[in-house]
Amino acid sequence: MNTNSNLYTVIYTTIIVVVVAAVLAFVSQSLKSKQEANEKADTISQMLTAGGFGSKAEFQAMGNAKVLDTYGEQIAQAFTVNEKGEKVADLSLTDREVLSPKQLKAQNYKVKDGSGYAIPVFIFKNGITVVPVYGAGLWGPVWGYIAFESDGKTIHGAYFDHESETAGLGAKIKDDPDFQAEFVGELADFGNKNVFDIVKGGAPKDAEGKSIVDNKIDAITGATMTSKGLDAAIDTWLGAYAAYFGSAVKAEEEQL
Image (cartoon, rainbow, N blue to C red):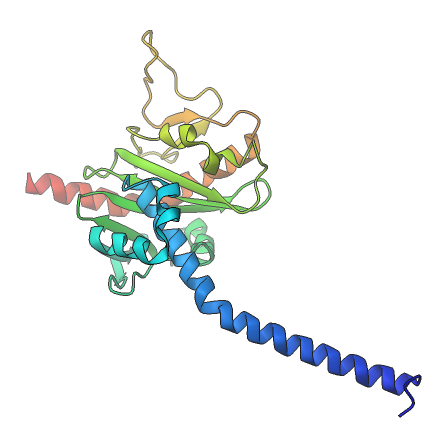
């Protein structure tokens, strides 16, 4: 065959494209299970961090297997609930079943519509309940986990992450432990449309510098859009859990 002909060029190019595509598909498929394992371990480490079982850095240093073991040792129940606060289905504790950020994104459309969703609840043996939030930041999705005390309204801890927020500004929702620490001890107002607010200036303070409104914290300076996006994500998702937490609190009160 004439190597200078157009036909040779077309055939050669086609073969190269097919071979490269096959190699990429093989590599992608080969790495898929490892990628899924990394994603699951990272998701669980974020939940455990929010729940106060350790820091994100500590869980990263553990490795995937130890993170999954820690989760298995601490988790008591995991299931999904609907807009009525009713259990939809159990999540496998044996398989360490969780919802990845991609799965949260799929549920987010239904959460914003206010119906048809099945969102996860994770209850740990120490009485801490962890739930996710998901929304849009300035440059991409933001998500995270908020842990509640057994009263179903006091925030025990929080951890947030993002896909592509600006370093040193919006990225502080993940990188600044002081921002996440502001949530600790605050109350979620499940009877209000604004369940929790991230606002410039935070909550009004008394003469001693203590907040006089429980469900407000200070937004990140210089990251207005990211703060607003996270604020909307928290309000929307915690609002979606309002019926569940309302029924859980009522059940606990009846037992006392």
